[in-house]
Amino acid sequence: MDHYSLEAWMKYVKNELEEEDREAYEDHLYTCDQCLEIYLEAMEEEEQALPAMPREEELTNLIMAQIGVEKLRESPPLISAEEQKQSSAKVTWFERCFPIAFACLMLIGGQVKVLEDTKGKTEKLK
Image (cartoon, rainbow, N blue to C red; front, side, top):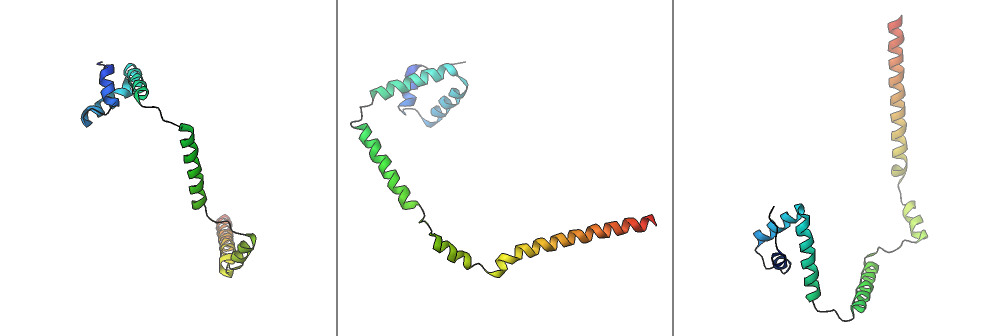
């Protein structure tokens, strides 16, 4: 199996390769642990070459605060107990009784079927 060098992985990390070559490198990473280690080394070197971010913790806190504000904007308003009572009072008779009536009809239909089957069996025995 061919392996890529650290320099080749550095080109990959810096996005200096053609799309076709990038895909070949990525496919190779799935099967080669040795190149995966070299790739991780290249990533670490590239990360160390980046400039340090000043006041990194302040930036993190600012972003987290903005996320909290966005969540508050997106959350639905709470419904009071009084509003819940009013909305449940608006439920129509049909909406309340139809499921019960349907279940009763299904039970009766099942009982009729059982009685018919039993009647048929007793007639065969005679």
